[in-house]
Image (cartoon, rainbow, N blue to C red; front, side, top):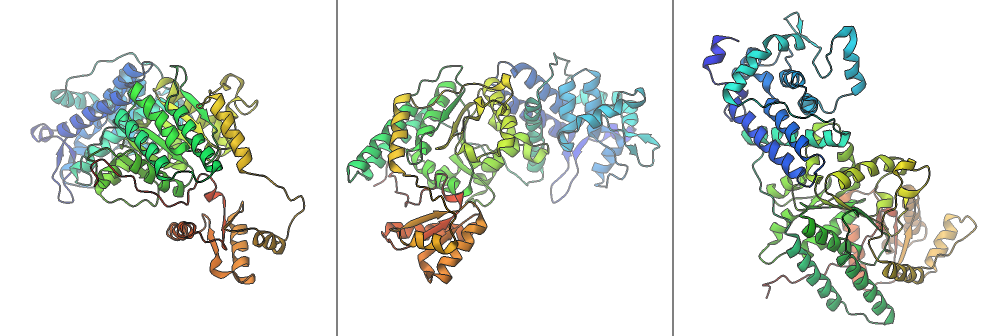
Length: 571
């Protein structure tokens, strides 16, 4: 290394966009500290992986930018130049950790910009007897050598400078990680690295997350459920029976004793029995007992997320917490959510809120992600309670076997508690040929047999399924619907069928504004406006009108106007 490099402060980031240079000492120290904190928090409930996981993440974070100590890269940073030689600063940290036989730490460093690599491509680097797995075999422009060759030439010099700033980290036991554990480790490093870089350039600021405070929120949820019963007293025997059933379901979930080996439970309580609050009560109880970090609620559609978030923000609000504060406590995370503050947006995007309500697409794509941007938030899932509602619609059937493997691993090795719920829950975990024989299992029910049987009996009385054996033309369907008492709900299995039928009723049958239409083909803004009109018509007790929709309204959507729950201290 040059004499100039030894007299100037070593850099990790150049000055730009009004921000000053960031020293290597500051960045490397910050990333190591924060990545290790993330790893310890994620592995706190993982006796199997805790020691090895934290050690691998700490070593990866310590050496993740080692290659930036090369003169070539220091000149790029000091003069804010383009990296015209194609120098890969990840190379040195990977090489050093491989020399120490710290395979998982080396893998994490190698992937922290690239994302998860292809193992077949890496194994192909064994060609010609060279062991270059997780090494950069590309040529450095203008130097006549490959990146790995320059790294090997100057590695001792990089380490000398690094260890002048930080004490060396000794090798530790190095068990091989599973794919999920590698993703979690990479998530810890990426989050720490991206966060520190973004804060230096003032693209992010540090936002402390609220605590879950599970026992207090559970008590508040109890008050909310009791208040709802008093707010809407039953008007007839059927409503009285329905209220009693909802109370029984809530109590069964709230008081369910969970054995240490019962990490996954099933809940097939029918629509209308209060799963939104009942399962939350169960998960808060488990979170309080096991000191879980947060609760994830995974839902298939954004319109269900909006209504669930509204319920949770009212039901879990503690004395002294404002409406804005509850946006930080219960985060809605989907593509069209609006945030009232930077803090709320940051907590939601990083899954750092104590209660995160997100789409099944977002949740399961994060579990399966290979890119660093998506994986950044994954470490937040470890040590959490997870509620996959409408599980039958959450994942395409062909993908459930792999997703179920990852969910089981989170529960068995990372302290998570999982509830799979749906009014029509297929018990795929014990279906022959769906999972491998050694993966099939029995999952206990969340609700006790007596209450479960009672809810199924009530559902059979609530809904009468009648079948029309002959195909019907659009004219016959229109006559059939029009002759039923209103208000009417017609659900089609495709957006095109729903749109054609709604148009036919409006135009050909001259029913005009008496026809409402909702599907995922309609923009979110227009869906929201239509849902508001539907709520208003129901509240006004209008009868002669029809809602034509797709399945986006059948998975637990509630069109009733939300009541206001008075918080402690309200006058």
